[in-house]
Length: 131
Image 1 (cartoon, rainbow, N blue to C red):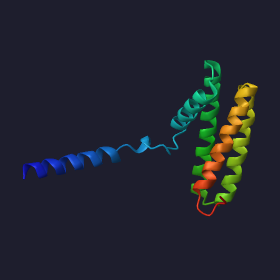
Image 2: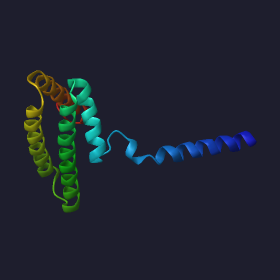
Image 3: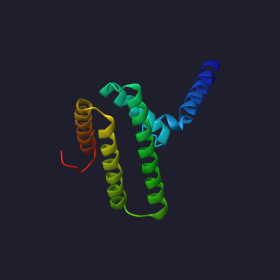
Image 4: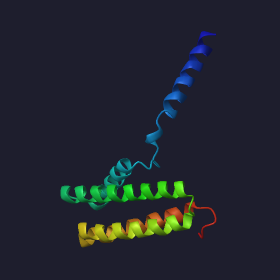
């Protein structure tokens, strides 16, 4: 009987602990978390120097804040997804333009390849999208 009670307490404590970690999932839309995660990925992929790392982080943070504001605006206004998608595309285009100014030519080529791979992964994960 004691073992069953201890087991139930352990299970309850474990599930409570895991569910109390809302910001820990990889899809967190917190701008700072997103910017850090994106910058770390690019730092490794592109071998960024310290100056580039700071500039890329600042750019990622700015972009993440703009995307978050757009999501909130869309949620509050009840506008359609298509309008938000178009605006997000514009934000990404501006980000890419600024990113090109930060990276060297070889880093830019790697970055473009990385973006294309991510686009393909996203389109494969969506139901009803062409595969």
